[in-house]
Image (cartoon, rainbow, N blue to C red; front, side, top):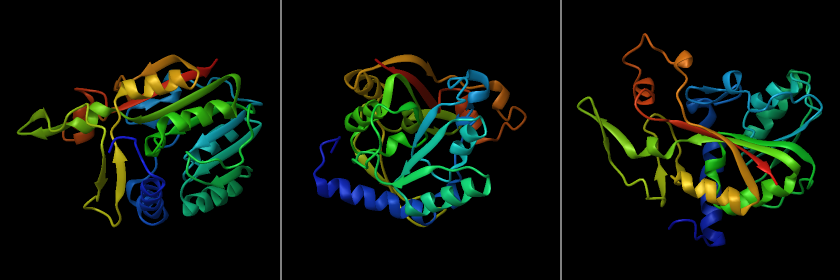
Length: 255
């Protein structure tokens, strides 16, 4: 199906994924939050944000609010967030209130117009949420509209190679084509609910950024050995991460 969707297709995907995050998703899978970008990549090492004091921050897929807390504690001027899940927005509001922080949070798919101010934010970022969009080019175009000129867009997601490889008899083998970006359903056997995902190529992200008027300043896919459970040779994710990237992060700037 690629990314050619009818409104009904998008509605079904949004409903499936929001229902998941409204119920079991975050409780079972946990949340990836700053200073981590994902498996074995951290802000502490790479300093992609730098000093955010006095800056206006917008998080795409704010989840439980912990990444917004990270920036609030570093004296960001304004905290804004959007998320497709009403329950996650509720959790984020409560968490930030408990931390003595205020934020403007909106429940909406990232692809949709939701009244966010344009040419307003110094940073827009997304920690392991951007890949849920049903319209990558449209989402990047909206992100560009939210940012001030020279504003920064930072996002992380699962590396597409990671989804192509399985372990068989102590060897890693390809079980799907890297070029297959069709949408598929996932029903984790350890929880209720289902997800709908697409594994996009890195070039899809790069080309969509260029089309939206961004220039890429940095891309990170290296595994940080200091974050690895080096003494646990049985850790399956760590074993993968020693062989190939499992997470990627891109920092881009609006021209």
